[in-house]
Image (cartoon, rainbow, N blue to C red; front, side, top):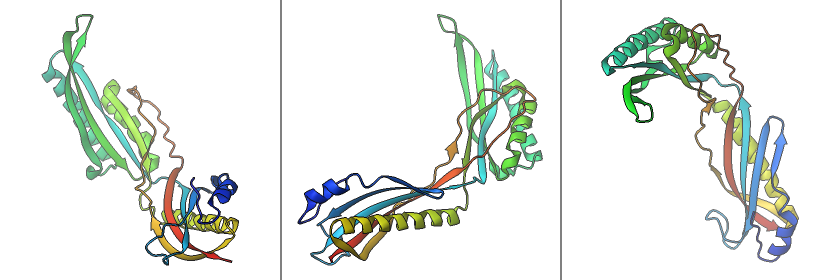
Amino acid sequence: MELKTAAAGTVLAAMLLGGAGLAVHGSSAVHLAAAISKPQDPKCPTGSSTVTVDGFATAQVAPNEITISLGVQTQATKATVALKDNSTKANALIAKLMSDGVAQDHIQTSNLSIQPVYSGPKQVLTGYQVNDTLTVTLLNLSTAGGIIDDAAQIAGNSVVVNDISFSVQNDGTVLAEARAAAVRQAQAQAHAMASAAGMVLGTLCSLVDDTGQPQPNSVGAQAPLAAKASTPVEAGQESVSADVTAVYELETT
């Protein structure tokens, strides 16, 4: 953190360097960093001092969408045989997903590959491996375990679950709460800094929303599943974050 004022920057920096950090209020964790500076924001009066505060707030919410990357992996001494076996099992898997209620537009082929397989010290070609990966999106999280179980029953030991990720769709209400918390905490920090500098907080010159796009929470890859597996899938909580930057004018008392 860098702190400056026209008259007493060095003293104020010593007073405030330990003041910003992590504060937890209710279900939101807020991290704040701030700096008092003489250079002017274009919206602040010319010649006035300003304080710039970054506020970051995170709210927790249950996810409402799950994405599963699963597929079929087959191997044979000939590429055509491996591909035919893979196609048969992949088509059966897609049919089962649709019969389980997964919409067709929520099933997407994300990867199809044919690779040679080598073995031994001399790396002799012994066959070919075919991978057909599907990305499946579920809006009903309670069905995820059953979907994975059915995939294992259809494809047997050839089924592979590569990744499971959770996300929050239509998170406007939660995001608005996180933004409000970030703004409130930024304002409180600005007040504290102004008071420590022997000044009072003036007009809000600018308020910028720096919030980025939410990222899905991945739970990582899994090994190939055995048939008739019982697969629990726990959604947990997702974090929805907001980041704002506020610039206030500082006035003398």
